[in-house]
Every structure is written in C-alpha cells, then in structure tokens.
Amino acid sequence: MTYKLGIPDEEFIRGKVPMTKQEVRILTIVKARLDEDSVVVDVGAGTGSISVEMALQAPKGMVYAIEKKNAALDLINKNCVKFGVENVEIIAAEAPGGMERLPELDAAVIGGSGNYLEVILDIIDSKLKPGGRIVLNCITLQTLNTAMVYMKTHHAYSYEIIQVQVSRYSQIGRYDMAKAENPIFIVTCTKNEENIDEED
Picture 1 (cartoon, rainbow, N blue to C red):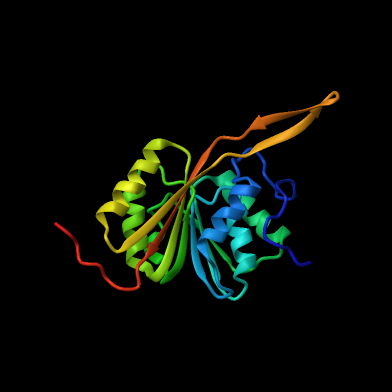
Picture 2: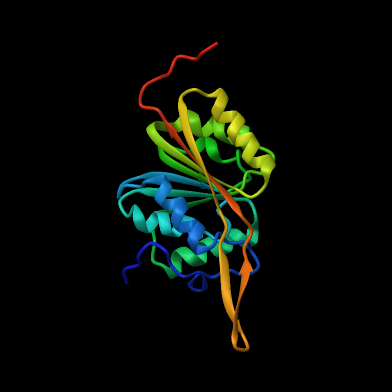
C-alpha cells in the first residue's frame, strides 16, 4: 500500500504516548525538505509518527529514531511494522546519548530534547551537511528561546519561525464546536552552504 504525506492520526498505534498531530507533522516534514535518499534523525521520536512519515518520503534513505521511553520504543517498532517501513533504525537512548553513532545527516527533526537542546544541536551541527536542515517543534517559550539564542550565536545558520495552532471541530448536538490544540512553534534552521564570517 502506498501512503501519501499526512497519514490520519487514528491510523497510528498510539497508546498513551504523546504524538505530533497530522497538521504539525505535515509542516515539519515539508520544512525538512527531504529527498528520496535523505538521511535523517528524529530526536524524541515518541510514537514514531514523524519517523514513519519521513521514512516513507525517503524510501532510499535512512531515518534514525532516538527515544528513551520503553513504551514509546515499542510503539515506534509497531508503527514501522504496520506501515511497512524498513529504513528506520531505532536508537534506545536519551539524547544526546546514542547520537555519536549517527552518520552524516541531510536533516534533523527535534521533537523532544529534555534539558539538553544545546548539546544535541552541537552534535547535529557536527554531522549536518551544508544545506541541511534542522526542524524543531517547540511547545514552550523556554525551548524556543534556547533554539533562537543558539542560532543567533552560530552564524553558519539562517532560520525562520512559524507558530501553528490547530482547532478541531466536533458536533455537539446541532452545533459544531471548536477544541483548540496547543500552539506549536516550528523553527526551521538551514546550514549555509558557505561559512559566514562572524561579526563583532
């Protein structure tokens, strides 16, 4: 079966592990600009929904899914089996643990970083190809601020930020009522092809 980008949320095996919702997942993967042979890391992979969709977008590439929680690791494996993707390697670790084994990367998606975002970005930076992209999904202002400060002090990167909030409507009697999801900041960072001299 062929799956198009934007698999409905209900098709994933979820359990009680938080999952990036369809609309944010689509934007995240589009911002990563994957090719069919891209090599990508998904840090804080959760249920594996982003890992699975990236693997489907890059069937000749490889996705490294890093996750620390046992329940989530089981879900990643189950979702990979369900959607028939064989190009996902699961790394059971709390990032930055396990990241030293990553190869050269075309892109990175960061959904969860704990208190280690700067260290995680340092490692990704050392492995990311020129022109490669880092896409961060930030729920808190603190994570957003850490990402912004990092990019402002690393002149090899340009970045953009969008804020997304999705409201889902459901029928309550004869009315359609909205239920808002949490807003998400999506930070897309591009590693410049050429080095930029730092300004004083």
